[in-house]
Each structure stands twice: as C-alpha cells, then as structure tokens.
Length: 70
Image (cartoon, rainbow, N blue to C red; front, side, top):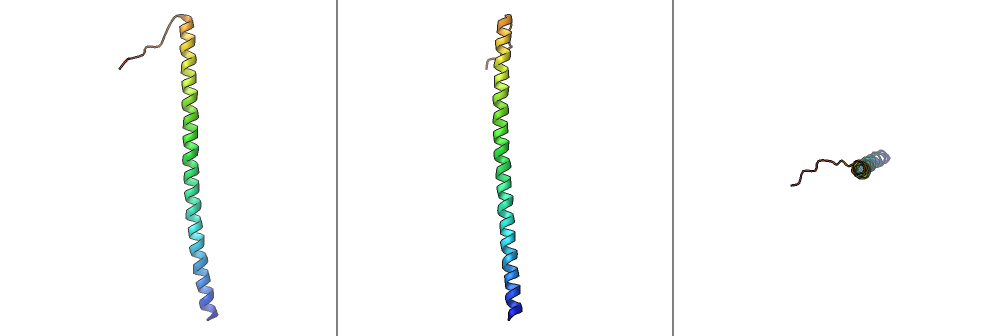
C-alpha cells in the first residue's frame, strides 16, 4: 500500500514537472518573440531616422535620392 502511494506521488510529480517545463518553454518562446518585435521596431526606427538624415544632407548639397512613384 505504501509502495503504491509512493509510485502515485512519483507519477504526480513527473506530470507536474512536465507541465512546468511546457509552461517555461512557452514563456521563453513568447519572450523571444516579443524581444524580436522590439528589436525589429527599433531597427526600423533607426533606418528611417538615418534615411531622413541622408535626405537632409543631400538636399543641403542640392542633390536628392531617386524616388520611384507608384
């Protein structure tokens, strides 16, 4: 009887550990996805800022980018 209880507790702990590992894996996945989105937005902002800076510098020199109109 005591042995059965120990086995049952072991199975219960194993299921709980597996569930916790799944939850941690999901949290890490979402954290990485969120970090990627933040870094992508920061890079997009930086590239836009640099593009505008280059436009201003070229306009100051009397030149410009070729912009195709669609």
